[in-house]
Length: 373
Image (tube, rainbow, N blue to C red; front, side, top):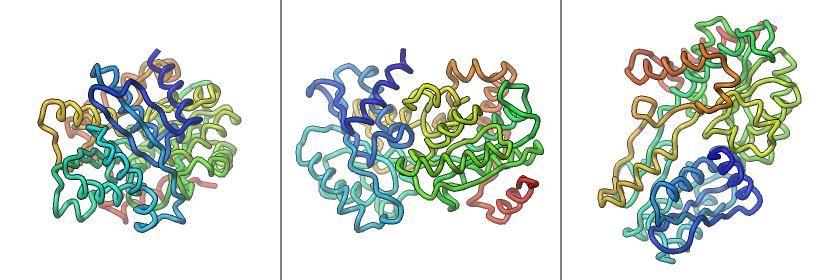
């Protein structure tokens, strides 16, 4: 039932761009994000806020898609001009107890609004690197987190190796897996460093490609990249490209292969059932847990504004979709194995590679796992 509700919500967001979940009384929350129809990064923030309605009676949640900005147009001035009017209108309305956002492209508008409206509370569920201005002069009405995303890659690498070395119906004898990432820069490669690390440890080849953006409009181009990987013998591809990465699921459906999701349980947010059926599991930072923490603290009168922690698996804010689909597709050994690995990682027993900390090591890892042909 929960999966069905999430799917219906995702479809509603895709076609309307705005949703309102309850009457305008009680405690009111607003989600301001560039897009609601990506089924991934921004949708995860909206779905995390939506969960408050069930957990906290009397809560209402509205969500607005402010418009996605292609990477070739992204700059501080343009982002501020595009998004600040939405923040200003929300603050001026006086309606919302909490405004939730995420993404580096929203940071300029978030900071400007927080300064202009010091009594308005804000949460960024992913600051993507705390802005220097905020780090130097914390704002007590802003709470935000960043994530140890390298942990996601290690978990994903473990399952990818299990898939490609298994006797699963759609796996072939070749030990090949793939990843498609939004952009080629250290902060995003941090997602996949641990992935490649596990593959190197298991003698698995890794095909790596980059979408060039995150917007859903380029999903067909990403599907072409994924098709080339599947044609080369790859059994499973992890998409780490937001809305653009949905093209991986299209290619997986056509090739009758496996895929991994990102940012949220994408088996519950991808509208095409045949595409959703290719998703073994998803690996994500848990925006819902961050939102719940901040919201419950606000209700208790102890909003954690002015703090911007980095959280990860050990803190309970990084995980994977342990759902019925995963348990049906993966063997009991894999299901139990990743659960055990999660506990080991949480206790600090596993050292996960960091691309940002060791760029030279990253180049060596890529060479060690590069396809032979």
